[in-house]
Image 1 (tube, rainbow, N blue to C red):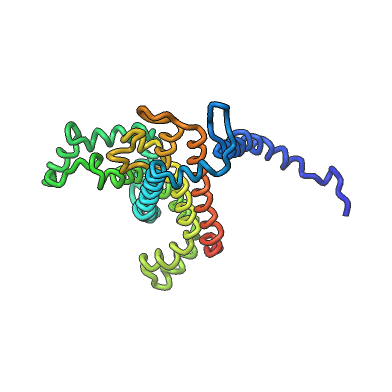
Image 2: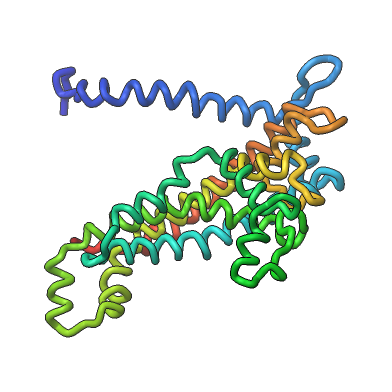
Length: 306
């Protein structure tokens, strides 16, 4: 079989070329350069190739590995709070907003999604002011309903600081899973739901046995997007707790750990090569999570015709 240049889909290549060039210049090449940098170290003689020594240093050195594993475990907890709090709330809100008889649905949808549009830094400072035990309004608000005795400096305690920050993040970004699930619920044909009503199915049975199976691919997508976003998180922790992610590194996640390693903090100098090593480890963790999703979870999801 012979091919001629006339058979080449040039119009498709022309449309793909700008995206391919931008992705290569600003994503693929910096990532490749970061991975290469992780195999070197800076010395008085210049940059020296040391193989996997940086990875061994980060993962096993008593000083660095303790902070790395602590940041990784905190990141896992940060992600689990989002999965088990943010996504169920997003599902509940989407189910309520998709009800036909709900008044003011557009207003509720806009108000819930609005915090997503705000800067994470602004959100962090606002909640820091609200929860401050010195000048915050939390004690006044809780006192109005007789709960002032329940107030605690949640952002200042090791046991509650990370949970509090995760819940602030949930409050800000719950609009994203809500909108994705809401769009998926609206795509379910009315004929299918009407047939279920005619057969005498209750609203709860329709949701659990018809709507929920149909939106499972969307729930899987929301979960993997949450995973990627949480393991790339940095700005909220940095805005509220700084690079040291206090108290006593209880809110330290991989993003803040990378920042301290690369740029340094207080009297400690940063190391670009060790920073590149931490960044590569973060990439490999996210890549492993995405591969698990695509090769194990995604293959078991069934896409029903709608």
